[in-house]
Length: 286
View 1: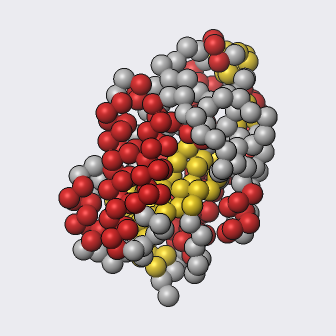
View 2: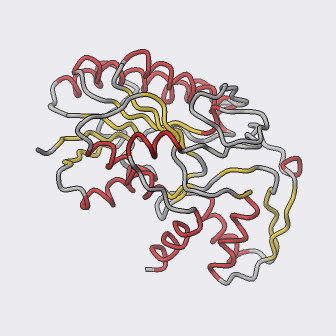
């Protein structure tokens, strides 16, 4: 039996990646909506649209992700990351259907030495992280069938991201600086999209918070060096501390995620970040 899935944030990296992988899941019938097609910050519109449709689940890929801008645009970040999330969670709860919401490693703050578990203490250090955490809580409190997926360092062949920025800078500059004291794991949005489709394909779903990123770990500097190596770029990359790049928002120093829960609950195989990066660079070349 096929399932009908609504996806919001259709034009973002993850929304476009879900569109890309959707043909591999013929039993999932997706409806992709952009902001112009459904204003998720309008409670009445959300309740009416979801209420009058026969969706089997809703996946929210929409988010305010301008991390530094959020420091001065707190209301805008709050509207999308908290209020809109709450409206979607309420609407799905009224229909008694699952709600999958994408969150972030930025719900964590300080330095730890072990990958972050779903149960670890959260302590966001910027407005973006705070609004994403509040959105998580609103969703979990509104709909008992909520799945939160925390992810990190997302990139893809779509939209703007770190990999595409590096590719541009390699063409423009002979030398660049990249921070080497923030540790995490890059996530190819296509892999995350595939994991979401696998979850949606299950008969029985397990709800709650799950972590997802590609396997392995690196600093932003090591990530940049790998992109350089794979593209035979000649730009010199200099490792620098975070303090060399003062930004409006603080960044977590360590945001490596423990993926044990999603792997055991949903039997999801997670690719290594290097192999996923190779795949993405081939896609761009093609």
